[in-house]
Amino acid sequence: MSSSQLRRFPRRRTSVGASRDFVAHVLREWQLTGLIEDIALCASELATNALLHGVPPGREFAVRLDLTDDLVRLEVRDSGEGRPEIQHADERSCSGRGLFLVGELAAEFGVDQHVVGKTVWAAFKRPPAT
Image (cartoon, rainbow, N blue to C red; front, side):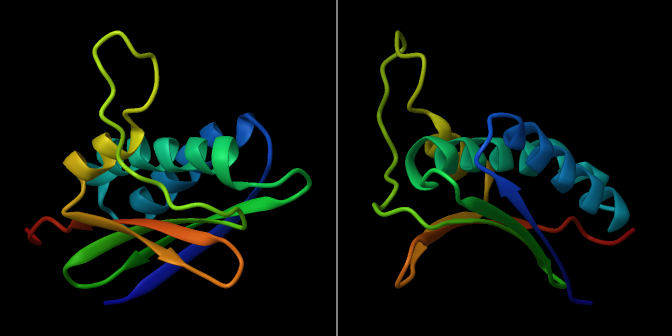
């Protein structure tokens, strides 16, 4: 079984919640409700990073979910420069933990550079079918 869903979001603060809702909706549609909490949190973190560091004014970012027999892959693509890196924030910092959380929750994650922009992705193992 293989499936994909893609949605674009404008460069607006409300797009973070909208991307999280999109992910939850798709995972419910795919009957993977047990993954909603982790993947929606990662979608929020990656969408926030895209808005803060990657999406130039007037542009959009895209959120994509791919489903295979073994994995759900979350991708957030933006047209900005730079390569996201895990920060080692201290306990007093209010930010800087997003990619660390993604790395802890996902089976694996990475960054694909493009001619214009990048895709930050995270892969999650599907639970065994019952």
